Image (cartoon, rainbow, N blue to C red; front, side, top):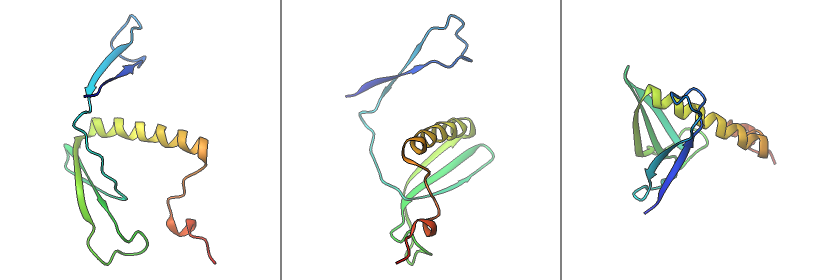
Length: 110
């Protein structure tokens, strides 16, 4: 069993003594799934993010995309996820270059 922790050094946290708090989490039951497709829908209270595998990433798929995983979360958590993903992608692009998400621009003409 893994018992890792994350340090919270948020300067706007309610702690006034500049202490570092530890958030404990257990990832012993986590499962990993690969996805190259996501669909986002929602309600006024929640965001629903579906993940799946698109076997035909270029053009319109000829078979249905099978959704294998779904995350339902509130907008506050989704916004924190947005900021974490933005920071992670920014660091990646600073190291490895800009990620081109338009597949047509990535295809090399022969």
